Amino acid sequence: MVGYDDVYEMIVIDFQEALKKYNISIEKIRSRRREKILVDLRQRIASDLKAKGYSFPMIGDVMNRHHTSVIHLVKERLIS
Image (cartoon, rainbow, N blue to C red):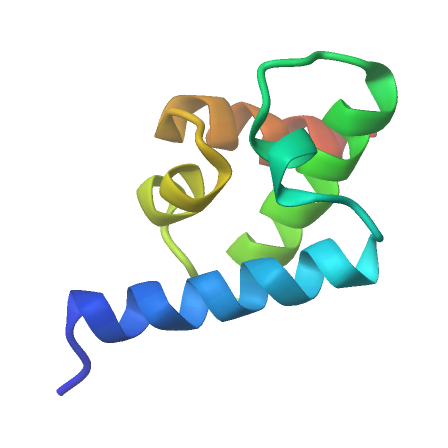
């Protein structure tokens, strides 16, 4: 049985791969800055992680966001 810690390790690895894919630092993605380019990248990364089956709270944990903010990011990505 896969536990929370195992899944958390997997999401951290996938998050790091996404940072490399989009060539962005963890500090910028986890920051509170709201520049358009950062918001767009957060949307892409959150959507990528959600597509892999991770929960909104787990995505929020690795991105330093509340899970409802992650829901909004993914929803906005689907609309645009």
